[in-house]
Amino acid sequence: MLKIVMKFGGTSLVDGNFKRLAEIVAEHARKKDKIVVVVSALAGVTDSLLEASHKAKNGRIDHVLKFTKDLERKHILGVNKSITSDYWRNKVKRKVKEVIEDLKNVLTGIAYLGELTPKSKDYVLSFGERLSTWIAWGTIRDYGLKSQYFTGETAGILTNSNFGEATPLLNVTKHQVKRRLESLIQKGVIPVVTGYIGVTQDGATTTLGRGGSDYSATIVGASIKADEVWIWTNVDGLMSADPQIVPSARLIPEVSYQEATEMAVFGAKVMHPKALEPAMEENIPVRIRNILNLKNPGTLI
Ligand code: ADP
Ligand code: ASP
Ligand code: MG
Image (spheres, protein in one colour):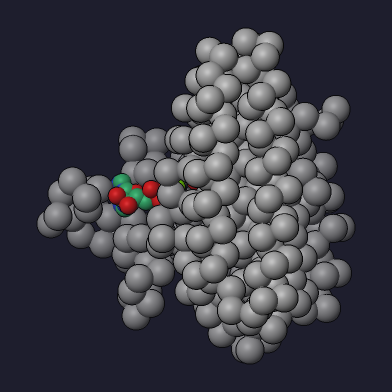
């Protein structure tokens, strides 16, 4: 019986299909493991939000409308692929539409003001995770498991106000996350938390830097003193080089926190450079695993 935080990267949610995520979670729930799920935006969505925020600043209302419509369609398609029952499908579709409506209002505001601040940009960038996490939640519920939706804010990830690359205030964060999630986990409820997002003391949304969902996962892991943190992605683990550039790259089965951090700092995108700090502090092993190759044990950090 393990307590595991599982982070699902955008690349692991292939074509917006969350069924693999739910199957993995269900398998561990059957073994009575205690699971917390951390979810990234679907692949490409954060980049498209960034682009949309700049176009909005330039007054492109036409793009705001087209963009939000396309983004809604993409996520509704994901809902249809992932969730079987009408009940959970309709519930999640309503949530997706609500989130899209909020995003449309924010982007419209930016377009009217012609002003994009670091603060408003972070709020826009947070919408990919707000959307994907509802689908993860609904798919897990559709598999008959108990689950509760959290954003980084409601889970209690408090940060400074360095928008775009915020630093978590770890002591308060650990205390808050533990208080909000631990009793649920013990009751067999699976908290599903947006990656990448934190909140300042005065309630503004922050992001933890690009690729920051890995960081969210280890922050949550350290808070609940997880036995392990698993990073699900689209490659077998940490490799000697980027396998998409160097096909002969070798898998590194085991590596220290220091070595993995060094590789992340020098560009191994599979791990956020700061993500291993909270894990190291609490001595929590981190595994990187390939959602498309479950037989492979991946990298153990
Ligand atoms: P996710 O959406 O799962 O967070 P990322 O794109 O952030 O995925 O990270 C996974 C990608 O990192 C892989 O597809 C791979 O191309 C790239 N990558 C770069 N360097 C490495 C490395 N040394 N080992 C493994 N993957 C790497
Ligand atoms: N969605 C965010 C990004 O693209 C965070 C992440 O994927 O980890 O940077
Ligand atoms: Mg990543």
